Image (cartoon, rainbow, N blue to C red; front, side, top):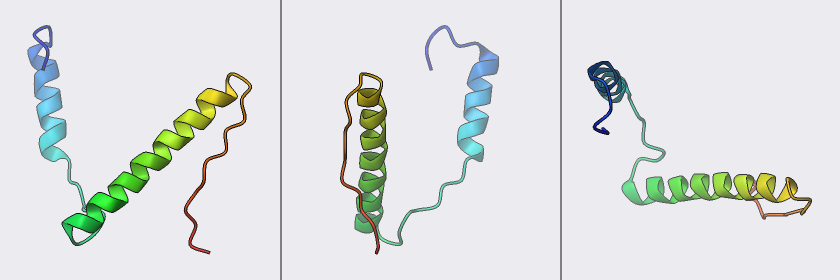
Length: 67
């Protein structure tokens, strides 16, 4: 936490972290990492698409479908 964080802010963040429960994306570590990487890449592609569109550029990114 930054030095300027108030004690209440530190307590709030600590509570959020300790109360958070996360489920793995897959039962094994490798598959979890692969799925996490795909999810992050999709988010980055979406961000890049919106950023380019704001400047009039049409960006097409491939997507993974299960068809």
